Length: 344
Picture 1 (cartoon, helix red, strand yellow):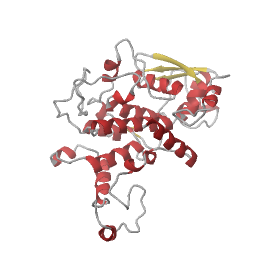
Picture 2 (picture 1 turned 180 degrees about the horizontal axis):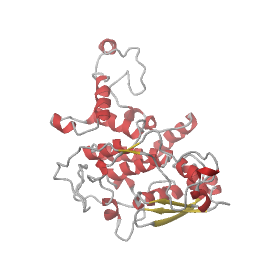
Picture 3 (picture 1 turned 30 degrees about the horizontal axis):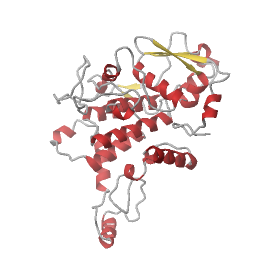
Picture 4 (picture 1 turned 180 degrees about the vertical axis):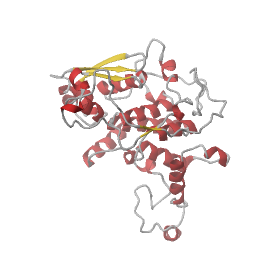
């Protein structure tokens, strides 16, 4: 039987998750939009929900989870992915363009406090005293009061949001989102979807969002804007694969034509990572002798680092996108590579 395009799990195994299971209601956003999903399916894909809906947590008892600070638009994409194994979207009455416009980065997005990278999941169930009260919400991490100093200086950014926009990647005026074609979606949708997937620990959705983001960036020959990078670093953990990808993408593709003062607005961790990546690169089109000499001079001859290619000046994403995935074993990695080959 054919494998699911998301997880490598067979369709038969996925269908088994829909039988003999409870239904769970997830209340999303300030408007309290309700989504009813199969508990076994959502717990199979998300470690966060698996923990929240187990043991003596109130959510596990009532099968009701409140997520007031989550975008219903992102949750709609998640539910479609959950049941169909691919990225798709069913628009609200407002239409997909207006729906996705609500996801654009704002000053508020990049001024929010950073997540505590040591605790992004609900606490472990340690006994009967761990049950939360009826009116509480599942906690998605402790917040720190570290604010961004990023300011908006790009008047060309287009947005239909009433909130002042951050420095997004500029979208052409004839850009059209297509519900069934994720490659038509704007970059900010995938960035926020990846952050959503990291927050709720949905490993396979992280990989899908990152892959689609990479495809759209390749087709449009664009990079993420400063606001998107700020948002990414405020809302992901230090070992985020999307952080790594954006660092590589910037190091290998950015022309660095802006004044130095512009780059001072970016996270220090990001700038240091880009600096190190560029410092470890080798000049392309060298003869073997010059190449070996360059390796020695750079101290890379015996240097073992998985994002350094010692044969040519290529970024990891040019060699294998699985570098940015989180496959638990080689079998899944090979299956993922095979699926990409059939869809390219």
